[in-house]
Image (cartoon, rainbow, N blue to C red; front, side, top):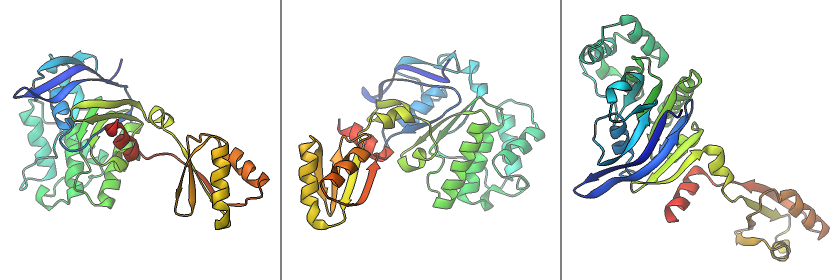
Length: 300
């Protein structure tokens, strides 16, 4: 059973669809990157899944429970939407204690300390929130999401605004949590960040799903490019002729020849160049980045 199963979920504002009949599944035990530019419908979708926004139509199951019955699954879901919000004059521990009280749960100091330790804030619980760095504030937000011992974490832009060091620390924390058995549904417009930690992706643009599936499936469906450079510039035109004779699509960029649709053809082309008396100075296979794949999906 998937952690999330979405069926034609739609949210309209003034008859304009912010989220337009999206459908996708997220398996359990993955870090799923919810990818899309600002305004694409990511946060609206997450709010619907958490019962904060009522869908205009469609349905969903969260951890096997229907979206129409949030009380059946919310206790098993931890979330951080649009950044953490805490009282600046209270300590980290007291902020989490207050959240337990307003949620109706019994105050459990042990679970608070465990959540702080899990996010790397052990020993910092008595420090005031206002003195925390942005990265520490994000960690505290994730600690708040962990207090109920959830099965599913929904995190909205957890690295937004962080410097490279802070973003790396949050990324490493998320990977560590996934290794502990959590399913993590994480949104971001920073594609490079998600590419480093996610094994599953849902791509959304203008409220519609452009792709949903594993990272392996996503990349295997993309064209690879063979990039070659001859030892002597005079041989570049000969390489172009050689590639065209083999039926390859090519493009010359600076001193490099790019050969498209060239999956597993590196060794073969190297042999052909050698037989033609051309020594290659450079030969490598490139696969498009997540950003390139996403922008290609947008154009299509």
